[in-house]
Amino acid sequence: MPGQRHLKVTTMRAALEEATVFVEKWSANVGQPVGNCPVRGVLDKISDKWSMLLVMTLASGPKRFNQLRREIPDISQKMLTQTLRDLQRDGMVSRQVFDTKPPSVEYRLTALGESVIVPFGHLIRWADENFADIDRSRTEFDQAA
Amino acid sequence: MPGQRHLKVTTMRAALEEATVFVEKWSANVGQPVGNCPVRGVLDKISDKWSMLLVMTLASGPKRFNQLRREIPDISQKMLTQTLRDLQRDGMVSRQVFDTKPPSVEYRLTALGESVIVPFGHLIRWADENFADIDRSRTEFDQAA
DNA sequence: CCGAATCCGGCGTGATACTG
DNA sequence: CAGTATCACGCCGGATTCGG
Image (cartoon, rainbow over all chains, first blue to last red; front, top):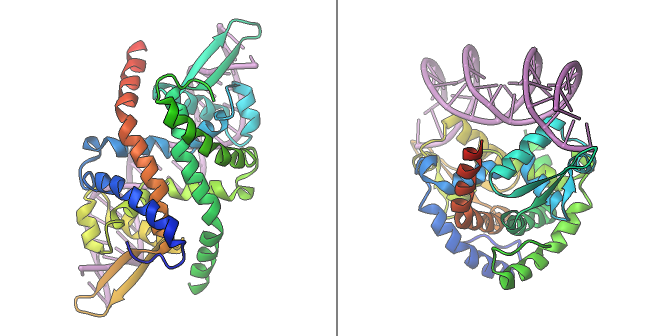
């Protein structure tokens, strides 16, 4: 794995080495139809517009429907319901209805849902550390054109 | 962080604790418009259909255009070109043209591009470890309906 | 308060054909 | 070999309205 001149080699090398195992595993699936690559199937679902944001919002604790709407102002009712149902279908979120009036519904992460905040966390940290470089690269690229 | 009964608590607890920092960082951005949340901006780009697959394919070494097409049979020329250019714009991939005939173009991961395979690796590993549970949860959910 | 149902515009995506 | 150009389709996602 060459080209690490801009990175802390010591920590990066270990991390890359750690990642190599996954890469090899992954490479074995590249080129196969999606149906035969369950990883791609899962990843496609994960990478929709709202799933990750919703999971990370629920990471701080169970929340009710309109509470989620308030914390994520730019999601529509429809997409919140839909994403929540998909997440429930995938076993990432559990839904509990309280027979009060007016009725309230609480959503919380399942064990599976909690487990995914770890890799999400890594991705978010990466994005947070590198978005400045990315923005700079974009403006450079656009100026060249 | 409750509800870890189905997971190895010892390792998970450490991992969750590690992730907590990122989650807090993340939570501070939830509710703000996308323009003010650079992390969401980066993540939106990442989560398109082909970016991650292309990065992981290039992780095993630099490759030429049609070589990539062969390794990813279900991508169209258009999307391969487009995704490659976006990746180049973001500084994840570098493009080198060789003035041979017929001309050949080599794509390789930059240092930034290589750094992202680490969080991607975590996500892929998670997907690989949990897709069976997810599939099972889906069929259960669908049968109930 | 927590949704379901409907309409509809835009854009991501693929198929096809053409170029240097 | 490595792209560009054009067209057409699907469906995601937002706005709105209605229901329990």
